[in-house]
Length: 304
Image (cartoon, rainbow, N blue to C red; front, side, top):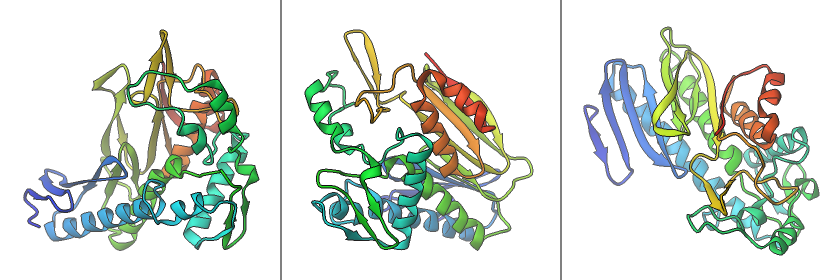
């Protein structure tokens, strides 16, 4: 793969030179992914990009609930039988439990039964209330049993790591790049979730999308080190009878969160933490700003 401007159709990877180094891009986890690399050596840039691509695809293949035969597929088809898990899967489950507890049950990876009812595909129709009430019976992470090497889900319950998986992939990729090339600053950007593990003196310029004008950046941030994540309903929502329903579902009511912001962007030490706080604030609805102020983090909230 030549570094000056190469496009590998098979792997959907491209790398291009920039005045500050190289910009690598590919697609994974249903998102455009980028790696900004402040390096002058094209061979090192190619190695960095390949590592990022392989790690993003590994995590997607392992944890996407839409891929048949992986660990999540087997858990979601266990029919009430405990299944073995490895240390990495255990780590994600433990973090999901932490999110569930800190949010008083609002951040719940077991809400798949509800998510399957709410379709944000342009059909502009609501699920039946009776179906929502039935689906809620299969939601509630407190009903899961987790040990060091097994997980038990009640029959009918399914889990989805989508709310934390991309952020985890960003952090994991950034950590691997920093460990292997500690002398170079990189910025890992998977679908707007970002991590910069090694400080860059003049920083990286990052634009925050304006949910009211998607073609324009609402703000330009300079990130020298740290992470950023955004949660919102800018692109995934329906309108029925003049009312807007975003895709952030309250698992306790079965309906989209009311008075939620259009989007929330949070800056934190790592992407998983930033993503957790961004999603939790969305779940707070009208109290999103107050919640984030209590956390002591930098943030940007957009409302309609």
